[in-house]
Length: 524
Image (cartoon, rainbow, N blue to C red):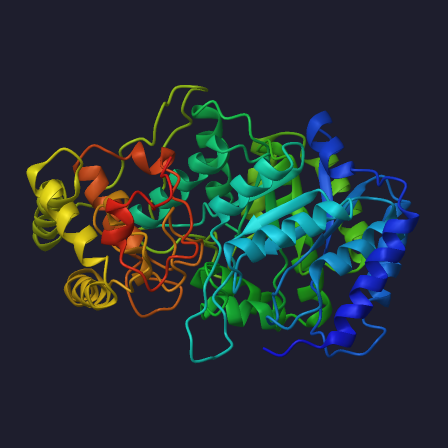
């Protein structure tokens, strides 16, 4: 990707102008979460950097308006959504903060960023007084290039942000809208990991299955987590509905029933379809309030006037639907199909974590559910690799002593070093998919190589899976195998606790050498 130096200069000019005027922005998002005031944010998705010069005028206008509206906590600003060549998120954040006087929520994605680059982005945001950030791995990159794209994992980004500025407000993502055991369990295991490293609140992925939003709130309370939940709500137009139903939006599911309901509404005319779509969105807001959510994060609502109208509709509905039971009746009635059936939001056979509400603080770990188990082939490979690792790499064994001596001796010469690297690559690539990252993490993934994940994720799956299939649609998510093996070994708790650092500066070197020389990062 080429960098336009004039564009960078313009961004720095905007930032320095804002910084020179900065007297401290009102962090209404933090305040809302602390006080329990229901929190609304308005979406802004940065356009491509080659867009016309006035592209941020609408952002300024909306920001000025919501700055005077105490109901709206700020703007939430996407990062590299349309392209890697989108307008800079921090520059947009500076514009929103200056116009509104409120700290926006910056989405900061790890896609096509090294760990150092991701840390630099966080540091730059903090230097501008932009302390609210949703730290994401990011969706799959659509651009093409010869070398592989790398992603900074959300887990490591959250940890870095909290180490750099312990008081910054960090959100993490969670997708409860999963219906297969492995992908659902992986979301809750990674959620616990984010809570354990200090995430301040959690924002869901988009979805319309309110039972899943309820399930997430139940699980949060059953674990005794005090982390606020914010629901990401999307109002699907007909165009959006077609794309989501055909599974073109990573990790977002729309059932056949819901798509058919939207088609029925559309058949009544555009005006009626629009009215019913806005009503659905307002009903979801009221449902989120009854389920104990701290706020809503709007997607697809990017005009101040539209958000105001939605808030007013939701407030009117809330007065008419004062209880969860009354709301559920209204939700079901709004989703009655022409044949009299109520919309089924889940796929056939979709799994839920609970049938009934668990007691608060009744769980210390992920409950057992479903019947997924590793295949005989997975178990056999795991057993072989575990035995080999113990014999050759675990400190204190005879094999490790011999291997260590041999590796260190070969590493003393260029020829030996090259031969060792080639041997490691040849043997491990065939068995595991090794790409000689120099920091072998298979031990912590039950002998699955994270390099076989297109995003290189070691700390858990992303939210882009679809019925256990990778977002890139060419393989099963590798974290499913890890989950099945951990479950069979009674070691699921490790998937909540173990923090695997990123690969930094070791690619193209031998992990064997780095291991025996003590050069690998510490896994926590």
